[in-house]
Length: 467
Image (cartoon, rainbow, N blue to C red; front, side, top):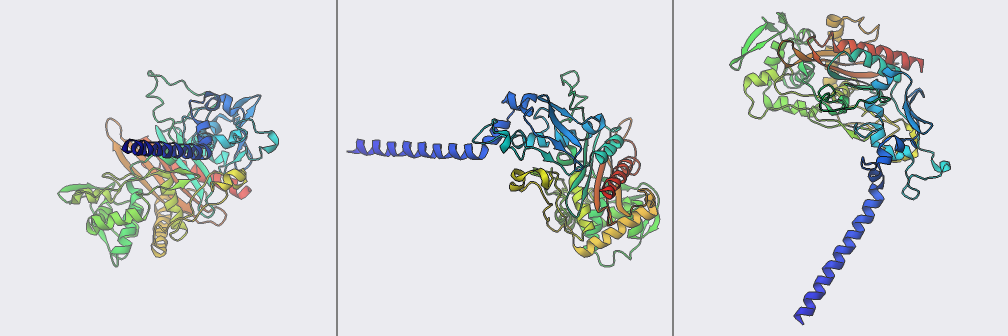
């Protein structure tokens, strides 16, 4: 009797396991079949042969970025455009995992759970994909950015969420991709990474926006206070050095002059808890999602931090790290009174499948990153920096609010800095936020990233006002 009972229980367990396994298999087949088709081990899909069935990819103005001609995948006629949009569009491989040809290959190829890859052409209404990017703006940014070891430039409409420009370097021509071997792999290190979404850099003085916000919200009368900068000051047992000797300055002047002494003193006065809370609120430690792809988190560390390290963190050094898209979103939030519209890169005209997935159409509202009153004050500080320090004619008459920064990274025979410029335009016809970073430069952010930002924003204005 006991033996029969044991056998019954064993049979019952086997049946339950079998049914559970079948249910799991059915669920995975229904939910993940398209993803399985896209895997690199399916050579007929991951190679050019798979994309030979893919639809056309165009920019916001219907300029063709990728298409199939005579069963071969080809890219834009302009080499600079091809390289500029490599990380957005992708190539014939799956190496650039965040690119649309990797993320949405099954939709582009017309894969169907019922028909597989042999869906009748009459049913393939959603194979083509329209993006929000502007090819000319991306080309302008790429031409300015390509002089540097690596970097990124992103411009997006902070009212609608449309990304007009997303450029990452290093890059290669998707029409003739390189053969990477042990002998040349250092030359192409990081080439498959979209730096706009998936990289972080040392912020330098652009982080002073965070320190300023913390001071505005926690130190009464901070806008009326004055500090003295003599170029060097001891804080917490170590020196804080400045880019110049600024004398007596207000917060507005210190922000424009990018005075390290003032912002180091502010960070030390605020303390690690308040600095950390503001960095967290403003999204430095958060991930954002752009058409289904998550950005890399930035970093602000206060664990076991001493006073000198805290002071340096307030000027964007120590272990501070930020992501380019993240900083563009923050600027968009400041422009909108504290709450951003999240960016997207797949147009609402892409087809019903992508719209159903919630990956196209409009930008979704984001969480508040800064209070309305603090956003207004930050905007005034950023506007003052342009008018009084960078030159209001820098962007051809556009009304820009901005901050530059130079993150010190590797020092040797030549400084390899991260040069930054971030900001936004308040003109009604060009509601654009931007973030540009150049890695591997001995220049300051104004002269390196400023050049990239200017090129991208001027072309973006032409494209938008022409629309």
